[in-house]
Image: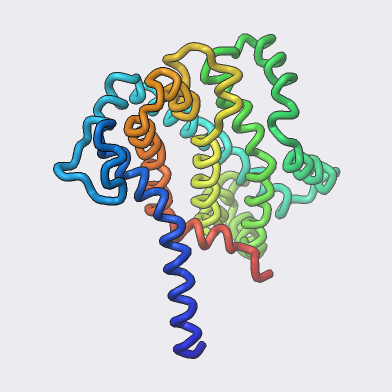
Length: 272
């Protein structure tokens, strides 16, 4: 690549970075302003920095409860998917059994089923099981809805596991689960990290299912609770901005910690 091409690429990336970060910068500034000076010099950094909006949203509006509820739901969904999808992906790639391709096609069919189309039937089933207005009524359906994509991703990642490693482990007397934990998991670790990040992200931002299932205010996650802030406080731009950044922070932190594994996991199988 020539120097001119590199310079052009740098400029293009810089423009896109500004385009992506500008809204975040504006929201950050709004979260540090009082309602009185919100529109006075909106692009300048306020001084002294005011964190009253964060304190008010976290303590007085019950946002801390919404945050913990989201953390509980997203962590539970992630654990359920990570405990099951890698095993299913391994079975679809490395094990021979009758109806394997038909069963995998059934999982793929789940990718094209939009959640809103089944929400009415799902509500009826949850009501019959007594799971309405409970976190379990959100966790189990979310895990099920994310399972098709998760199995598809894990099946792709499992193709990187050499058959020779599995055969050598079996010849050494290892059981199925010992082979999976000691041989397969270390090889597909980047893919597992990607799965954790993707599932947590989708579960964290889910809105429709918690909105339909949860009625008690103290059980609602961030997405549903944050939507109620506007009606409760009117157009409180500073409070809404602070709430958005609080909800956004865990995702940024998780991605920064796992970004290298995420990129490696997503690119797994791309050059096959």
